[in-house]
Length: 139
Image (cartoon, rainbow, N blue to C red):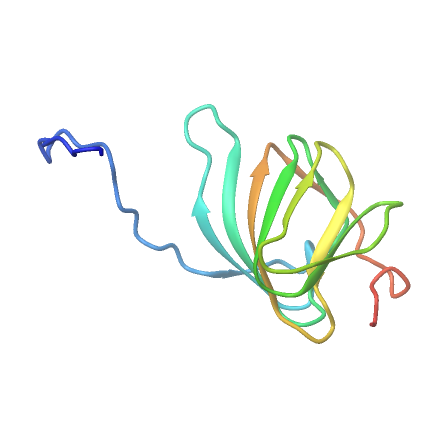
């Protein structure tokens, strides 16, 4: 069993950060209403971020890619993810989706449900075109 050791509170490096305001995802990146809670930003030389992204029904990203890849963890609802040229994949709470560096992809909610995921993103994001009506499924 681990026994905590006493630490001088003035020497502690653990911090509780205040919650940042939720912000609406920009129309250049998303179709529909998407809200983002930033949870962790890059520190030092690391270029990774962590966010909780909330998609309303039908909302989804534009095509995009990340220079160091992205990992998503669905926490609520039902959604989709698709790599360019790949199959459409339905995603649900508990699913973990790993997108390799520089792979063009999109993700978002289904037409009938909300969907929230945690997004752990590395490096720079390049945004491409919005999905066409033929690319987003209507169920």
